[in-house]
Amino acid sequence: MKKILIALALLTLPGLTVASGDGGFHPMTAPIDPHNDASLQKGAKLFVNYCMGCHSLEHQRYNRMARDIGLTDEQVKENLIFTGAKVGDLMKNAMPKTEAKQWFGVTPPDLTLIARSRGVDYLYTYLLTFYEDSSRPFGVNNAIFPNAGMPHVLWQLQGMQKPVYAVHKNAEGHEAKTLTGFELVQPGSMSPPEYKEAMADLVNFLAYVGEPIKLERQAIGIWVVLFLVLAFVVFYLLKKEYWKDVH
Image 1 (tube, rainbow, N blue to C red):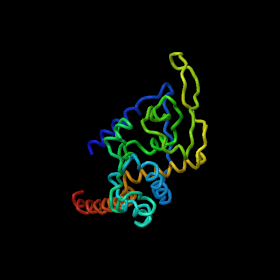
Image 2: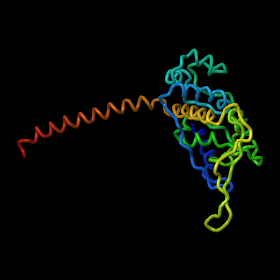
Image 3: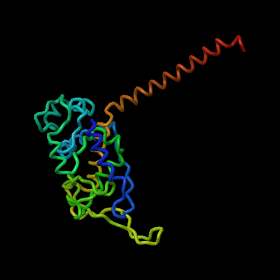
Image 4: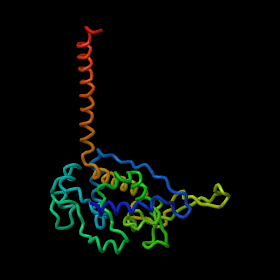
């Protein structure tokens, strides 16, 4: 657990800076819906196919995921497990951490809690804003996470895009540029709207993984509040009954 926290801390540090004078990039709103099982199932499929080669979900079990997002154990075995893992196992990958650190400079972090630590809007924006940058080791950079050490593993779906800048004068009168958007230079297998929807599904799934009991907790919370309101009324009437002779 300590190693996971250290890795997450190392990866978040560059995100506190602004990339080469672009003035930063504001997060987009992630259109997620934790009640949408179809979206969660699509997100799970994207994760195991494109993310799980490097990143694990070491605190999530396959069968718990199946139960929560409307899948059977058999469906998970046939469509979401590509190793010798059993349906009751934790969602770990086989990448050796020592070699991974040599390849990427830091061990790819476990993503079980990434949606809670970074926020769904940040993740959604991160997945949408990779762009061409020949100066980087993998040939890409990221608008919200400058100098990220991760390749754009979803480029075949999104295609490749280049940044579009607006040039202006800053407060000191010097010329500066602000990243205003992106231009698609190489189409992917998905159209831009389709890719945005797919990334919303992936973020929706990661948000679920970060707190699988969220919907149940919220449902219980409503009953707890109703109980407290009813208890308040009863206790208030009792108080009036006990104190009526005093007043």
